[in-house]
Image (cartoon, rainbow, N blue to C red):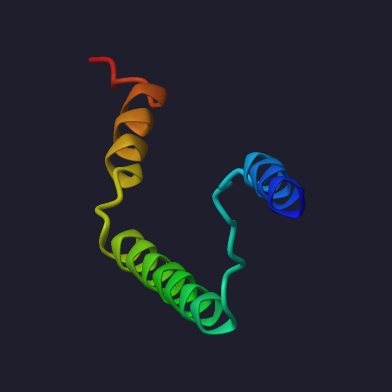
Length: 77
């Protein structure tokens, strides 16, 4: 009788425990590494943006001369 109850108890407990995937929390070291990487990437993108902005050719001067020519009437003969 005791063996029978033990077998029943083992069968019921094995059916109740399903193997669910466990979720692990990010470690402090991994979080620190991620923060350093993302911060460095942000700084590099800011530096790249400013480099491109400073070295870009300005098209405003050409447009200003064209608009000035359109605004000033031609001399009549």
